[in-house]
Length: 394
Image: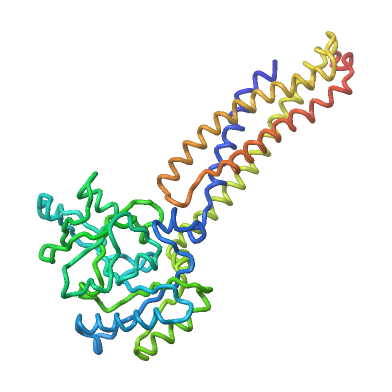
């Protein structure tokens, strides 16, 4: 029969449309996803950030910069609406993080040029609490971790797993660079994504107390607020001016805004994927309807013969819907498998941007099935008005 001859045309059409479900499910906004998936290990909400340029003329020595950091931290902490404030040499989504080679004291010294590298970050006491970064083991830095005390460090989970897989990192010693001091590991922190939102790789990272590092000409402020983050910005600027009215504060913005700006390309790509997925889905539904309707209409002579041999119009409608349902089921099953495979590949390549939402996926599949069955049902209703004799004469 004509219907069976066209099976190969209809099934790929349904299958191809279902594969477009991945594109429609893929658009996500790194700003609003939250800390676990894109912000990568910290809580970006209720977090205000800013960048301070430290004048070399007034604060040209490490001692001067350390003293400035202490005073700034005290003034920021005393600002109304501030839960906790912290300072750092870099923040996520605020630029490229400096890195250096890392050596573990109890591990073989690697050959020249093969030593692993890790992000190197100077942070004040309270940094992990302010950023919402959980510690997996050990303690956070305190005000007692000063330049005249024992050098200490907190390493990321990725760093601990690299040097001491299956063992505790606490009490081990690491060194940044070839001639740096040995720092005792006092804590292990959750991995944090700094800027590479698209690949989801957990890069190694070593944190050192701000007072135990030389510091540079830039300090970043992270403030966890108890009020609306935008409303507290003027108060933070005033607190900084009370320390040094010539100290410039730049890029005062929420962490969510910083993430949005740093992932602008991903936002654009997610919108583009959603648009392309919607257009592809619409075109495929039109194609499915047209193909199914044409196939059923082409069977008019067959229906006439069946009715002449004793079949009823209701039998023709039921037969058409049954066969259309079988084809639709095969197409959706094949398309779903391909869509899941394609979605998994995209999710691995574009971490945080692509996800497969079960509800959206099911709604698209249901919509395709409805279109296919409707396209089969409407032409088959014409059999209710068929004159078998006229059909046979034709």
